[in-house]
Structures are given as structure tokens and as C-alpha cells.
Image (cartoon, helix red, strand yellow):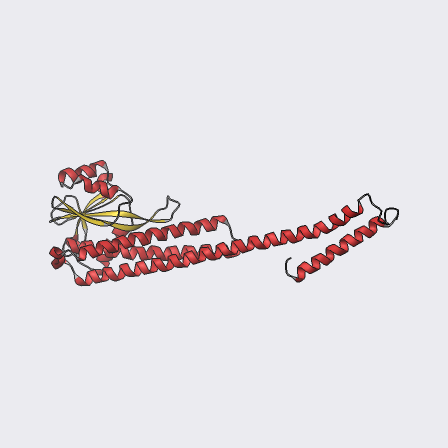
Length: 313
């Protein structure tokens, strides 16, 4: 039952209704593929096994490849990883096409694909062929990049507010992890952009492209890239600023510790001189200790006043 649930046959012309048996022009969506799913895709559909191995590689870059009449496209999509230290990463989404076949494979369960179907049903949008669905997936991935970027920005602001109250290593580490997420996003979107350029240069397939849809994809992808770069620059500046604050706070602490040491050193110096085995005129006086104590306190107070005047304390 789990296998049937994770491998879905969707009829795009019938409001993406889920069917039990595959027919031509159905969208085959496979999430978290099992061994049975792999056998079905390679044996029943005839998809090259190398395609599935490439999609399984979590570090696979966006690209397009053709083999035995099949076309493979790998698209990097955003993914919120609740089990990892880094909150947001990107994962490969494999798109495999051949005439009446359209297959998407992802080794992670994401929110993007269900949201795409819900959006198209709400807007009453139709899919006109495989390439139209490809660009819909491009568009949806860009939209989800923007959604997650807003969440990342809200998280970074919350951490910054905590840092303003008390600078702790935990908050700085959180900012560092958020910065890593932005690096993943920027790198993946750059790869998606290069893939989009390659698709636009496919002269044999241009007649199947919807120009308005392609333009929407370009706009959303550019906006997501610009937003990610802006957030990354802001976060980098924030990290540098807090690093400077930490360094400045350390300098202030060291300055105060040095000033306190100097204040405490004055009574110690005077007591050391008084305790030397030389004649100083006070060794026989009953008030000698009191005089030395008063002198020590007086010099300490004077030194403290001087440091306060210079704002060293």
C-alpha cells in the first residue's frame, strides 16, 4: 500500500485526478522511490538505470541529458530539512520525458508538488503537453524559493534581536547555518538558470513552449536569485558587524581588567617598599601601618579617578 501511495498516476487533463493504472500522457510522480518503484521504472517503462542513479545523487547539479530517446532534466528544488542542522537545503528533482511519458522522481517528500497541483486547480490552469508541465515545475520551484527565503529572513531577524540583548555562541551558530542555506539556494538557482537557458536554446522544441509561461519562469527565477543575494549580503554584513562587536567587547573587558590590575598593584607596590629591610622612618612609629594604608588607599582612589575620567572604567 505504501508503494502505491508514493507512486502516483495523475491525469493532468482531469484536474490531476489520481488513477490506479497508467495511461498515455499521465504524469507519473514518484516520491521516496522503493526497490519496487525502481523496478517498475526501469523494467516496465524502460527508463535507463543511469538516470535513476543520477537523480539519487543528492549533489547532482541541474542539467539536461538525452539517452535512448529519453530526456532527463535535473532541477534543484528547495527543501525544508527538519532533521538536519541546516534548516533549508536543496534536493534534486528528476524530470524524465519520452513522447507520451512524463515522470518526476524525488528522494524527498516536499511540499512543492502538492502545492503546484493545488495552485493549478484553484486557478483552473491547464497543462498543454510535457514541456508546459516542465516549465510549471520550474515556476513552482522559484515560488517556493521565495517562500523559504522569507522564512529565512524572518529567522535571521529573530536571531539578530536575540544577539542585540546578549551575544552568545548559539545565536552566532544559527546565523552561520542560515548563511549556509542561502549559499545552497544561490548555487542551486544559478544552476537552474543555466538549465533554463539550455532549454530555451532547444530549437527543435521551441514550438512546444508557451512564451508567456517561459517569461514568468524567468521573472520569478531572477527575483528569487536577487532576493537570495540581497539576504546573503545583509547576513554577511550582520555577521561581520557582530564579529566586530564581540571583538570590541573583548577589548573593553581586557581594558577594564588591566585598569583594575593597575589599581590593585599600587597598594602592593607601596606595601612591598615599606616591607623592605631599609630605614624609612616609619618602622618604629605606632602609626606607620595606618599611614601606609592611607597612602595606598589615596593613590588607589586617585588612580581610579584618573581611569574614570578617561573612561577606562
